[in-house]
Image 1 (cartoon, rainbow, N blue to C red):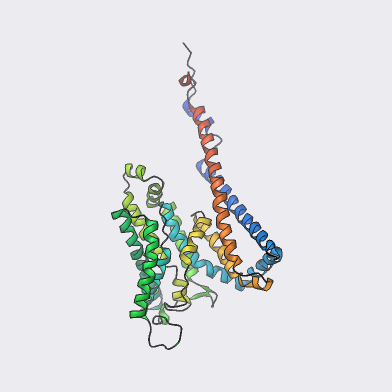
Image 2: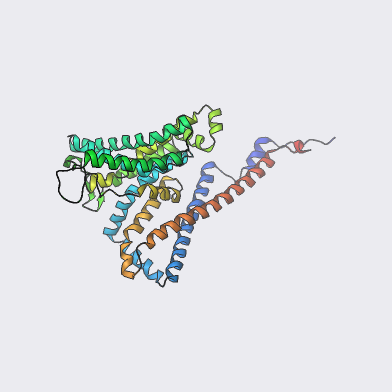
Length: 385
């Protein structure tokens, strides 16, 4: 008979987990690794883009130097922040869905529909300046949530894949917007070619942080990113949301209604998406019309992926995209087509996704190996006989 020798479980676990230290330290190390991999991926993307420029007969060093010299001028920095503002809002809207394992590709239609409704309703009421702006923001969020709610109902009640539902609702939204705008809400009292809805009263104009350069919607965007961090990463609701996204079956076993979380996540995502066009509606054209930018919903997907759905990453990625967009025009001085910026952004997304996926797999293998060693150290020796 083999004599059983026991190792105290507490001591075994302590020795086995000594290298893992505390969860906070472990998470911080993983965060540093992820951040370093993202930065390395961005640098790799710039190298690849530089090679492409060189192959086309352009000087990448001169182009990058000109972008840096121009981009760090005060007016260009403000422009970069202004361009980053809607991207942060769009990325947060997308990231909320990602955390629930939902792909809300309908942010484009949601924010355009919300922009029209908010502009029309805002022009029809009269309120004091701070309340008027706040009222329009609430209307925009309600309109975005309503449009996203259609996809939520289809997903929960009929099992329609949210990717199909939201992308089709983008086209439906464009048609509905065009019909409403042409038939009811176009301001026919103006004879200029820049057709738009009725101009918002001055009480509904969002003040600028820097005159003509940076809208105070930048502060609203930062607040929304902070709220996203609190709600998704620090609250009980956020835990239930992320748990449902990681494993809906296990979440249901724990008493979490996955359908309710799906519906709630899409509604919140749509509400945030409703704010994406507000820098233009409240700060630039003060109406809905040709000046409202499109494509921000799809750009938000790229920013969310680049930022790894993390609040700090979203802000950094939006700033990077804003910087690239702000310096696109100066490249023409170097006889480089400004469209290369779109190529650079696409390569950045590809390299970041590939590099981060490789790093994530390596981290998972390392964690599995350390966990196995910890369990072996915590197992009584006699149990192995």
